[in-house]
Length: 330
Image (cartoon, rainbow, N blue to C red; front, side):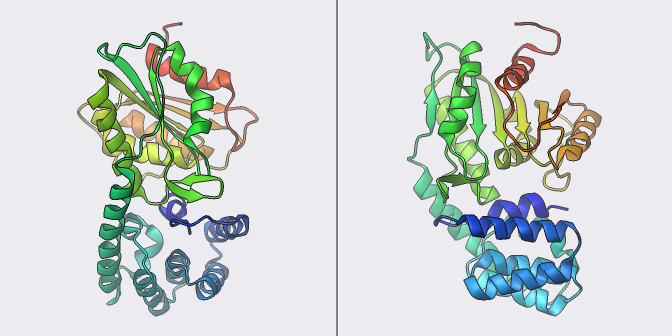
């Protein structure tokens, strides 16, 4: 089931800000879908789609109607989503909520429109993003010619790179690492969100290439919080050879979002989540999948923590383990 990652990632945030009420509606819809109340979810999504003319709500209507067994209506709404500009091509490819209509005569029509939208959208994003430099914190007595660890940290939905810099800069300094904390660029309230997975993937890889052109990077650690952790899960698997370690913090692992790498150069994983956070069981799944694939994995479920940010000590231990190893103290 990819609805949590693939659809929530593209939820109603284009270049405009999303209101608290809209975000609450998105969470309510997700909750009803996860509960399997598809008729109610379909009614909610169709109502929102009709009132807002928003392409993501149209897409959600297609998903809910398909799960409710109303296949013709679902296919119609998917075509409408594409015609309204929906460009979530990864969702079209992987979202299991669309499985009931994948053989419908109109699915191919919708897919073609969405792919064209996605191509145009991604090109616009690249043109806008290519000249934007992220927030960077260099270590003390930095020597650009000396091989240095690079830590890239991705913020959560509605967050900022500055907030991640504030949380991680002490730990990066301790390991004499360069810290790069980008904004996701698409506005979300007072911050930003990683709206489309293809954009997030391109931007992270672009920043990695940008950093390597400036500094002597010897290894790269990718971290992310919440929505940023979902991105880290995806990129850490699909581009495994690029990363020394990955730290997804309070994210949501889903096995069908990306293939687990089973050979070649691969990262080690520090899976950090609040024990009371809803997706905590998915981290058990991730630990097993990555361990079975032969990767080095440590899972830490923080007692008493829900979907909140870990303490300074928890972050310090995560980075220490990634940099130093399991049994090597500072």
